[in-house]
Image (cartoon, rainbow, N blue to C red):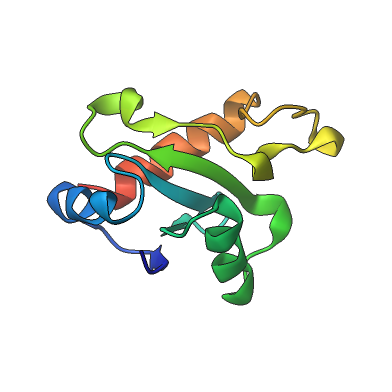
Length: 114
């Protein structure tokens, strides 16, 4: 799947149609918590991360998630990615453990996916 930067609303049905291209019901994404945008697609979260970096995002603001468009509410987001390992920010695992970051991501995803 081609990596696409989402800065305006994308419909849930459109997102569902993108999912089967790579991982069945899941789409990998990187979220810029400062700019309120995300990049979806690619084989690795780092692929989407790279696209955001090339578009002017800063590394410190990028976090990886998995989107499951077939699930409702908070279950649609899985906060797991290798790019989330950030010992300097006290996030020592692939899972985002910082509540403020998780909340920002949840708000951004809800704003961008309708």
